[in-house]
Amino acid sequence: MSTRSIRRSDDDSDADSPELTAVQAALAAEHAAVYGYGVLGGRLDGKQGAEARSAHDAHRARRDALARAARDLGGRPVASNAAYALPFAVPDGPAAVRLAAVLEDRIAGAYADLVRATEGARRRDAAGALREAAVRSARWRGGNVAFPGLAERAAGADPAATGPVEAAGADGTR
Image (tube, rainbow, N blue to C red; front, side, top):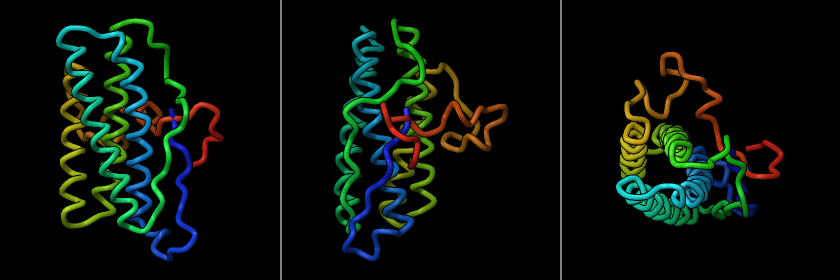
């Protein structure tokens, strides 16, 4: 799954700011996560199903907050795609759990970038979101990674495995 390219406001010189770019990238990643949890949630029940619903709700809330942040920064929030290509088939519960871990790893990467690009309250919020994604990823995976959100720092990590999510039919540009 990959995020769509980020649209910028044509009438605002701050539209090219690193902060707005990082907010838009995190927003695009949240759109993809909301979609992904919608797919995997139907394949989980019991405690895992409840965790998936909770994560889905958390990602929707973060998505909405990021859309407000993009507007506050003078941008037009990047819209969700109609569909996203999943990184692998999700026919059953074990595959759904794997997808949840991948989604959280990817979200952690987007929030790590947002932490680097922001200051103050927005940085604290991004750090909190990074922490939440790392905790959810560890729960889904059954273990943690050394540097959540920083695939290039994790020993033995495959950066492609935690890269951006791809929109179905997207041209691959960010």
